[in-house]
Image 1 (cartoon, rainbow, N blue to C red):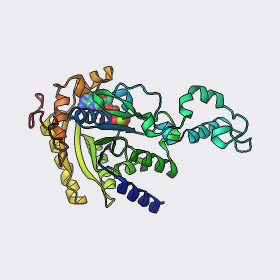
Image 2: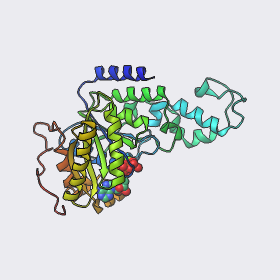
Image 3: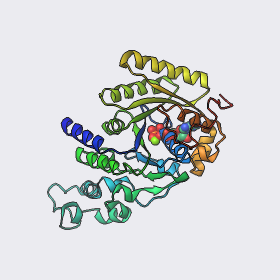
Image 4: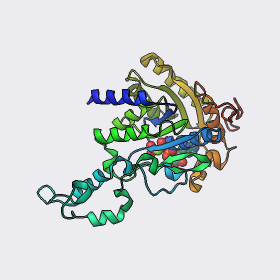
Length: 329
Ligand SMILES: Nc1ncnc2c1ncn2[C@@H]1O[C@H](COP(=O)(O)OP(=O)(O)OP(=O)(O)O)[C@@H](O)[C@H]1O
Ligand SMILES: [Mg+2]
């Protein structure tokens, strides 16, 4: 299995063209990854880059909500509508093991299985199989968004074939954007690690508290266990102030240097700011909702520390008050 993964990775690497891939991840959940992913996408799109943001928090993603998007299709249609359907039909029918074959697209033919009508009504769109380009929709500031596959346990536990199909689908986006942002789930799930390993840059988001930092370290350790990992960046989110946030970041960087021989790139911090909650109510990413808010200014400043800089000639990224501390910092 490992060999097949390696082959796939080499094949994908060989096919890559111009798109720089960022994975946004964390050790612990709820640290603000999706907000960071959405707002990185907005900031870079405003700077003139073509940006695609993909919700890869399989099963529980919410990037579409944060970006105010209502889309008819999502990644569940890409991953495999047929598998999805079969899984649900089996779950509905306790006699399935001895029963008649599943009908139509799931198996080819046969009588309708128990619950089929219910699910086909409820998830009528979910039965369609789409390409990743077909499910992509236009979002705020011109960002293109691939909405996540939510609420399906099956999707959260992809088998090898499905994951390979998903990764190949992601590669179909290569060349369509300058920047591809992958909002991953939290933790060390195999899916998350695969997505991080296909990225050129991995933005690890952590909060300035011991459990979050410890989980971030575990995640970084696993990501960097692979010899061909991308650049690893750290962003401290929901910080009280710059000094305490950066102290935590520097502490983690020192540990990474000592035990992993890794030069963690410190992007900075984003303030714990009520504007984030307010922006969520309107489903507008906070950098658009209030560009002068502390959180927005922090994020724009952090963007400048992505090295080598993601700055397009004539673009705005990197011109937003370098070194300017948010007032509350
Ligand atoms: N800078 C911030 N200031 C205040 N609240 C924030 C900030 N960033 C995120 N939050 C809040 O933290 C919560 C979690 O945010 P978000 O959904 O982005 O985290 P996540 O890491 O993607 O979570 P999950 O692991 O569940 O995917 C949300 O309620 C959000 O409003
Ligand atoms: Mg999230």
